[in-house]
Each structure stands twice: as C-alpha cells, then as structure tokens.
Image (cartoon, rainbow, N blue to C red; front, side, top):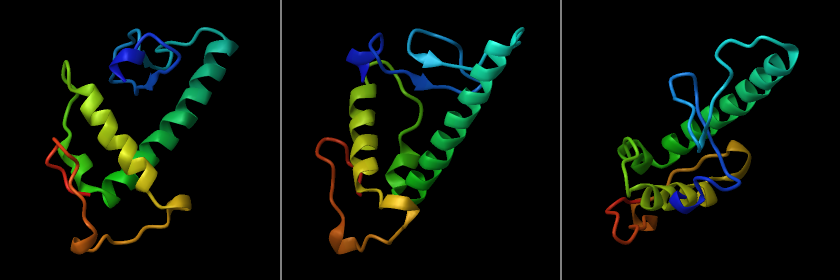
Length: 112
C-alpha cells in the first residue's frame, strides 16, 4: 500500500482526517452543486466502508489490535486487512471460526 500512495488508489477518510496525497475527504464547506454532489457520493462510500470494516472487525478480532498506521507499518497491516477481506463471508453471512481452524499470520502474531 505504501508504494501506491500517489498512485490510482485513495484512502476514503472521514471529516476527522486531513486531506493529503492519499486520503480523500469530503469538501468541508461546499460552495456549489458539484461539491455538494461530491460530498453526497463521498458520504455513501464512507458509510459502506464503515459498515464493511465493522463487519470485518466482528469476524476477525485481530483487526481490533491494528491501531493507528505508523511509518513503515502500512504494508504489514494492509496485508492482514486484505487477507481478512478475502476470508469474509459473502453478503454479510457470518460464521464462527473454530479454534482448530485458526491460522497464524507469519510475522504478525495475529490469529484468524
């Protein structure tokens, strides 16, 4: 992820985030219809992201331990998030992972 900060990907940030090269936030004080439409679209995708991450955190408790992203830690954290998103049941169906089915991410110490 760190290699892609200035590439085609953005992190969708809420109002508490500062606008930067890789974080896309809403327009703080929209002055025209274009900015209002952008804010509406941003709010929709932000809600989807929030709900999706909430579902992932309920299924995979290891995501609760990731904390804030620090310099040099994005690659490792993004790999954990990517792995959990692949394992997340489709259409919001959840299931419990039995202890015998748990796997440890190498070099992370997190169980999934």
